[in-house]
Image 1 (cartoon, rainbow, N blue to C red):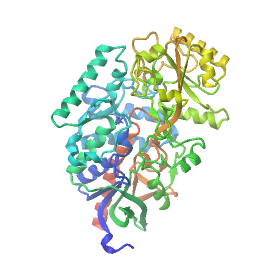
Image 2 (image 1 turned 135 degrees about the horizontal axis):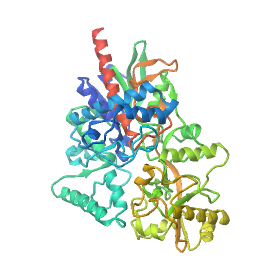
Image 3 (image 1 turned 90 degrees about the vertical axis):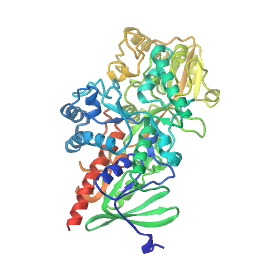
Amino acid sequence: MLTEKSRKTFDLVIVGSGTGLAAALAAHERGLEVLVIEKTDLIGGSTARSGGAFWIPANEILEARGAGDTVERADRYLETLVGETSTPAKLRKYVRSGNDTVRMLRRMTRMKFTWAQGYSDYHPEVSGGSAAGRSCECRPFDAARLGPHRADLRPSVMSAPVPMAVTGGDYKWLNLMVKIPVRGLAVAAWRAIQGVGGLLIGRRYVAGGQALAAGLYDGVLRANIPVWRNTELLEVHRNEDGVSGILVRRDGQEQEIDARAGVVLAAGGFDHDLVWRQRHQSKHLKDWSLGSSGNTGDAIKAGIAVGGSTALLDQSWWFPAFAPLAGRAPTVMLAERSLPGSFMIDRHGRRFINEAVDYMSFGQRILHRERTGDPVGTMWMVFDQEYRNSYLLGGSVFPHMPLPKAWYEQGIAVNATSWKALARKMGVDETSFSNEAARFAEAATAGVDEQFMRGQSAYDRYYGDPTISPNPNLRALDPRRLYAVKIVLSDLGTCGGLQTDERSRVLGVDGNAIDGLYAIGNTAANLFGTRYPGAGGTIGPGLVGGYVAADDAAERARRIERG
């Protein structure tokens, strides 16, 4: 039973410890008394499991490196790319608040940021797009700064076999270590020296999403912002003046929390609520999301319960992945599908997409096929021995290494010495597959993929092999030693949720903002509608959305104080 002693009061309550930590820092800087609650016992949410890049145009990190980006160019890119699946007001607010967000992070944390130069926007050919890219990331961060709280940090999806803080920019060159050894080995050596040397002096360097999450958490701890773990959101409370607080279950006990200025819902999407996912997205989906384990849509459902409206529930940050071994999660595919000497096929034994396309578009294509009555079915990535000798596979199978025995035993991988023999093992039509292989070889020789335009975009070429010409994404396969690995549709989290306005306020079913209720990150419907502008398009809106929400909440607190 609840008692008066069980009530706590804060200005702003943040639900979720991923990019919600940025909202907490922004609110604290504005003088608000802030509380962060986290459903699980680990901090960082899906941010900690991600690549950690953030796509924020026209910020001072880009300016310092001479990227030449402008808000006008970013406006043009987003308005052209996103179209009617979002609103111009939200897009313009995002672009104009991005640099302020970056500056706040630099003031409130010990993170150092860098531009991932050359990591192209995902649609650079669209007006306002950038082949040089706008994605930034945190430099390797010393997680030892967290002290005893380092154990609170949610683990990464991928980890190196030795202590190495590998950034997104590093991965490209590590993957090309065999083909461009001077650059690849130099990167590997530096990260190994940094990692192992750091251990000797008590440092624990992390990179990617781990660095961003650790840096945010470090900032929160230094600001003495309380973070309650193992605290589950049960209800949002709303009265005639707007949202007034929440009801939580903390360590098994229910507790009321009053929130004078409002509540920010930043608890991720409904990644692991398979009932919702099969209802809104596809009845064939399995629980293969790479999102944080606590992401079951609690915050979205709580927002709906107080009148919040939703949008884009059919959308996710889709990601192709290697099929999982029994009892394990899928393994993300990064550069593998872009590299020459490989292609993908559907259940008919035919290519069905530009394999190097951005991963959200990849998933959307698969679901479109399903909805139009011609499902892709079982997918395979096909490659040859030269490919196997040259590149990483799944982040852990190094060049020249044999594929894991368990992959063959569980039917995830097959091999053969001819196209028809491989087709039989994959269970696809031999003639269709052989014809498709011949067509791919012809395209590779010409350097032009007339079917799907693979290698025409600067984004495709970023993860290509520059030692291959005339197209760094295309090379004919040698049928004397062929492999195929089964591919599944995974994701980085859902990106449909509560509808918000340009101030991150949740919109009610009547179209009006619910005073004091905010949603950011994957709890909110994707700022970019059905599109993915560039690497970090998941994290950028969480960071900026949190900054904008904190600004609005601070103004609300002042209005309430004035009466």
